[in-house]
Image (tube, rainbow, N blue to C red; front, side, top):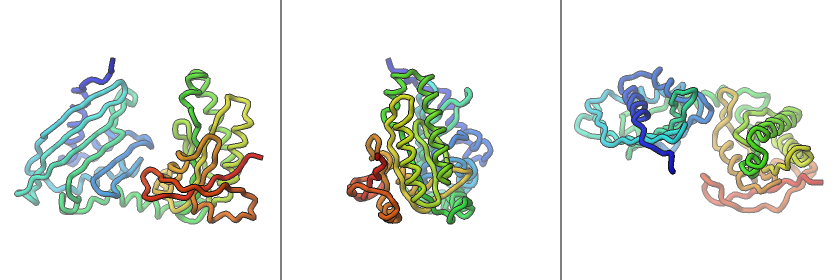
Length: 324
């Protein structure tokens, strides 16, 4: 039997969120958002996809750009919950003081999760069928400005904004967790992450974060990233724990750093390259391969052409050999 049920509680929470926007209550808006790295904020514009603290810090300014309202009418609303997660969908009709003769339809979707007994928004998607400049009469740049500021303030022992981003991911982790039991599997994953962190830091990289059963790290240049990837693959194969098959992906380019986290198209592409790698494979982008000379001791398979989710066209992916 499905555990999904209508949720008057979540509907009330979401209406408080909607009410706080035109009433200019930025603190309330921030407090209703998760503090986790997984916070995602999606708007109408092509570039309006933001994550993490940039959203929390910029939320008041983003919604503060909306002009005063003459009318705010809810035209549709539903909310459901399933255990510790839930979702809400709204439609509204807005009339602004600056454009009293025109009504604008707005759609909003919120995904929420229980955090210490309190519902927090982890994903927000709002959309209107026209650009923000026409909708509100002004650009809403608060969050994008924070992202740009984070890029300007990028500070690592490397060239500003440039990094080799590496992801690792355990293949079939759900099956392994089922076989070993959650407690033992959690212990093995922790040990696995500790090994990866040691290898990355010994190679001069930065262990950025763990993501479920995967990791993300950053290096100043591709050579230490490739060497670290080989060492991680070998260490995983030689581990005396359960047999773990690992996939690894690497891509280079300009990244944005904020609060010790990284984001941008380079990060997204590195993650997509990881997703196309097979068990035990290290895959890297054509751009990464171009920066590594054959005389530097690396061996690569013939490039393959493949689509990457979220990116246009075909992409050339190389496999780095690591087995001896």
